[in-house]
Length: 561
Image (tube, rainbow, N blue to C red; front, side, top):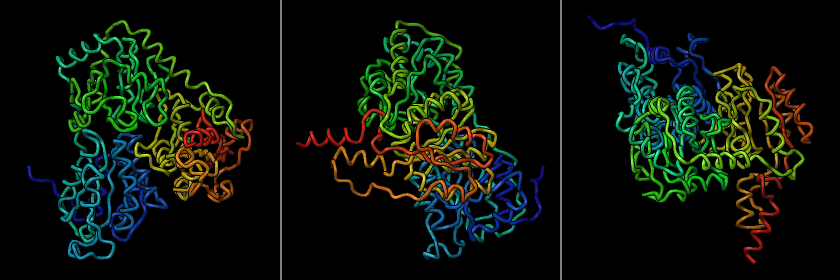
């Protein structure tokens, strides 16, 4: 058959055609003259492939990264060259560490101007080469379908992640008749061999203190349920790696906590004392391993079975006793057909009790007690709610004091990026307008991207934002008091009137002064059709749930005496 030939159109229109056929429905970005041809093509796709106009490229990058993490399909971001690209780089870094599929399209100077340090010129292969899974540039309009097909497939296959594609402006205005892509490539996950599964089950069955550690990108709800069925049927304990606890039902008797920042002593002991660890799709990062101390590098004391969708993660830090190249979904489905037994019922029960005990908190020395706030939210948020956060001490509340059900999701950055929470919440509302989305933000964290309230207003994608205002960069202040007690430098914040700011963007907004006022304020926020910002009056004394700022300082002073 002769090759299909399309009518003549420019590169911008061809690119947008390809994205639509690949399945893209939403995009985020900040406009620039370097990709006007794409913006013109998007004029004709409203309602099919929408463009969410953002206020800063960093916010746009975060939105695309969060969209990819939530939906499992690439979050699409368009930014202009030079400053636009460098602003957006934080989203690429976050998507990479989150294993979230994303494609960042960056405007570029004309092909004939490259290499002269033209206005806003950047070598994107060099800049993004170590941040993204792949960074490339399309110099020939006829190659748009080829490059986009590879970019989409690379973003979602193996360990998901970000791809950066530079678009020279003259290439986008060149005309072509090459056909657009018909659709995405269906990449089947690597599945384990039957003999390998038998070996894994045998290793677990011989253990006295077995432990499953799950996490990473690419899970589906069905495979999470399959893993839960195997764990509960075999009475095995399961922990989640850093900020992936939403992928296993926290109400299951098998769920025993998460390994990450603020790890409880019970979780540390669980990992350290386990004799066999089955790690499924976990990338062994610093936070999951408590600074690589819970497992010895490169050969752990625990017997380690490492299953990962990417062969590049196997043996990357730790030398496993058994390395299995398989996707988390394929592997979990195989496990669901099996059940093992052993003398570890007490081990699992003690681990679950340790998880439950971590929710018992004393009254906190703060006008608004976040322990009580979280107890209210655990009881009142819908079963499909989405929680988001950026970075700071405040993140311990959604990360350690909320029990995620099977359909509730957490969008939180593995990269520890401040300012992620609000853009992520907006992306969640763009993807699923009907879901309740709650963003947790510190006062410093919120101001990293507070201008994106305008994006939410314009897009009709307004979440509920809880600003935990304690007047300080809390995490840095905590370390400051522990290392340089009473020498407060560069961490105290003087803040604007957050309520007035939010109202200027059309939000329902109010300041919550006391714990007793929170429930009614939150109900008003839920009832609002405009989204809501609740500023919570938090004392800097309550920097952590179990140690006050004064106690940190006194301990540090005593140690230095």
